[in-house]
Length: 79
Image (cartoon, rainbow, N blue to C red; front, side):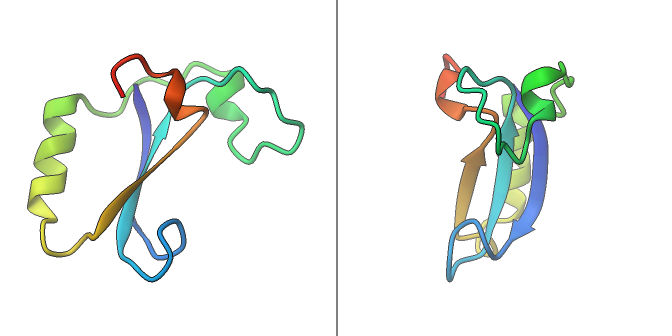
């Protein structure tokens, strides 16, 4: 589930333009987590796969990458 989107980041993919997707859920419970609300609360998905692909296609040639963060992205069964 994509529960957050930062449309442009210059930090998450150094020396490149990218967007950042945030996924829900994590099993690690790190005390220093900077996205704890994605773990402790149940945010609603902000877009489905089709909407994400549409967003990315519109930014082809502008974005050089996509950073996937969380939560823990690898818990998503269809990543």
